[in-house]
Image (cartoon, rainbow, N blue to C red; front, top):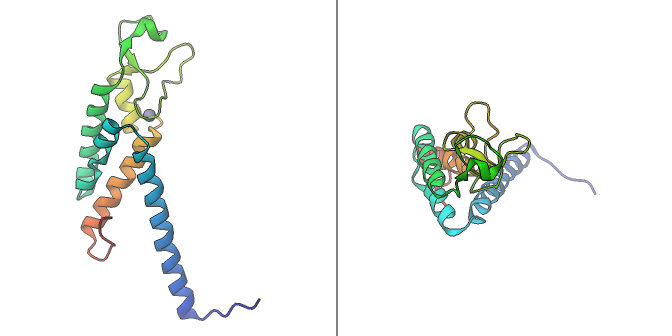
Length: 150
Ligand SMILES: [Zn+2]
């Protein structure tokens, strides 16, 4: 089959394809958040109110604090840590520190680092999806030509 491509239609196709891919990416992140149980989904859905990048990171920190409060923190000795610290697996993804024989993250600092992706920590996949949505919301709020909130 011969495909007739003019310069004009090629540009239209690219723009259309980019919009379709942006929509698909947004939907994938949105669905990841919606897979969470009600309370966690409620905390993460606050990305809707983010209007600029600085407030995106401020919101992420507030969400991390709320998630740390609902984490199932247990005494370290129950999680293989001989120290006196509390530990908890991530309430979103179930991950823990990459330390043999020890479960979860130290609470609150290790869990916060995981949720925020701080100090070279591998950021929580679910939290990264929420940050993506927050940054997208900020971009839409600051760009009058961007498609508005869904
Ligand atoms: Zn996680």
